[in-house]
Length: 198
Ligand code: SAH
Ligand code: MG
Image (cartoon, rainbow, N blue to C red):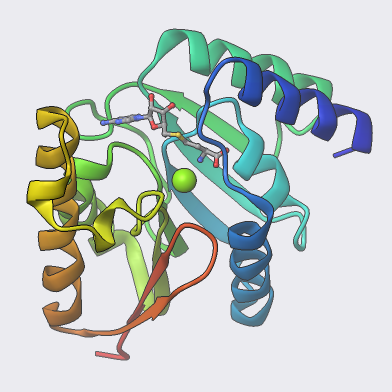
């Protein structure tokens, strides 16, 4: 993606409160994708297509990415078109937990970056696609530092509920059978599950 498009997308995200990945987290994810020699990724939570376009720069890998918000999806369509990446980034419109999608039978990486309160459900719905030795990446496990706070110190009820769920997820993810887990305390907190050979 050319620098101008990248800057335009970053500006749009800032002005419209779209939570695109920040550089530190992105650098880590790109490093993992390289090492993994990933060819096919499924992303949950496209937003405007920023992370998809950034990830695609590694080996021009194929990305399938799901977005349920019409406005976000339409922005992503425009951006992918501007970047001329329609052949490599497949935008899927719908709710990742409800709708049916045509997806590849095996993926190298599942990148979960949609509603933070639903991470376990996204994982359970799509993990069967991850091939042995493939990985699952979770973004925003620290949620801007709130996850390290005591629940009673969080005043907003909605935020408290979200953080409670994310705290529970952070515990649950360590216990999943058939995977090794690693938490990377950089960016907004990145979780990596690696699927065991069998
Ligand atoms: N990956 C993007 C940011 C995604 S923000 C980037 O870093 O550039 C999270 C997005 O997930 C939002 O646009 C939201 O609409 C979408 N989302 C949340 N829940 C979803 C669901 N159940 N199905 C599909 N998309 C969902
Ligand atoms: Mg994110």
